[in-house]
Length: 211
Image (cartoon, rainbow, N blue to C red):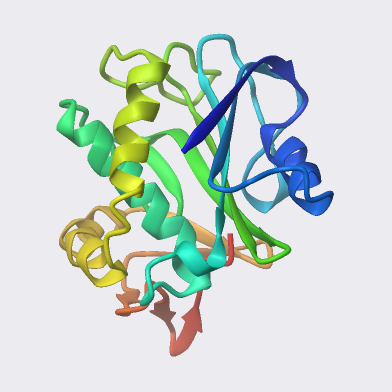
């Protein structure tokens, strides 16, 4: 994975999207910034860019993804690999369905995915050193360079979805006291049923992450 490091940018996601649209990059490529002024969170919300935190986006060609990975569950796949990377470093982080990183009951970050010209773009925000009110920060000390090196080593192994999912499934019970959203409606995760493709069944309706 090539890594392009920037001092400051409005959004690593938007920057990388434009590079892909204009055919100015060779994938896989990651863009990481020291500061971000207009980050993008879930459901088009902003993501507060406090100094010292992780502001990352990376692009991978669709034909390089695991053969059994559905695009609807790409955020779960890549987010869970990051969760496992952090866990190997003794973090207690867990992944709330489908794409939010939590310590206990507070969010510390998230991941969203987009497809641009046969390329998957994953955007990651993670509170490593600082957190705004009502959020939390990572529970371990680690440099961004070390984290990215370990994470992309795991990503490049191209592990099958079924292997990642089997581990994620074991921890899914941690979602039971939380909610997700669909079309701006809150949906309780208490009684949902996790499906093998990463979707959930709620009141008879199948819901994909679509993020």
